Length: 120
Image 1 (cartoon, rainbow, N blue to C red):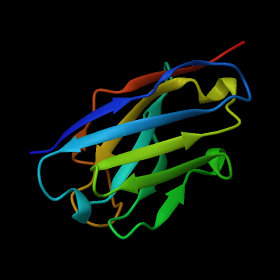
Image 2: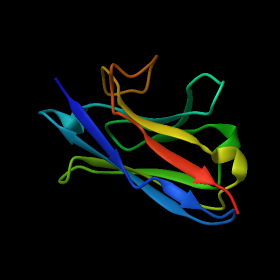
Image 3: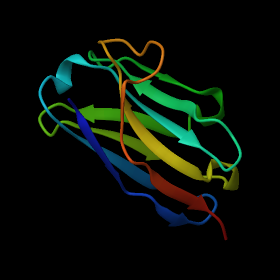
Image 4: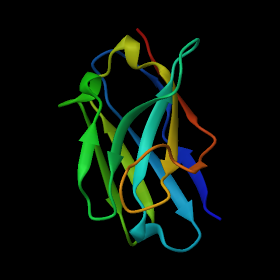
């Protein structure tokens, strides 16, 4: 069973940057796809970015060219680099691990989430 622990959230001004981290425990990190989702108040959780076991990435349209997902296999950590942040990026951000090497359907393991607030 995998455990995921997110960190790096906080309060940032519009236009600022943050880097979220998701540390994974358990075996097999390198063979699974990983993803970042967010959930704003009153809205459903939705995909922000995902990365396959081989490093291929995909992004939601609303974060393209602003956010970047990466993974460090040695540290068993996945990152979300967030740039040019907007107030509408305010949400709880969750890290998830998929059941296979591709980012299909929904993750089967989730972290506890980290709050990101973009406000002046």
